[in-house]
Image (tube, rainbow, N blue to C red; front, side, top):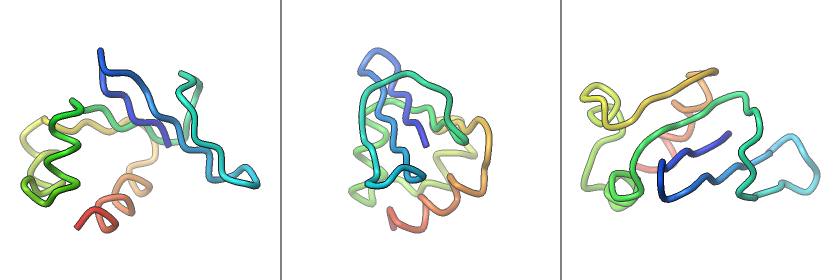
Length: 76
């Protein structure tokens, strides 16, 4: 999974690697989640519902949407 925060950078989590790799490389991922760092922080703090963020365009998903949906359950 890759998080693209625009000008604030990228965080990539490779859960297929052992051990899991977390880095800032802009490489292909099964799922890319695009949003601002501020919106991510508000989702993580419970101030914005991830589904509402998706429906209002604050959060965009490219690739395997089911992976992004699993992430949403973790951020509640």
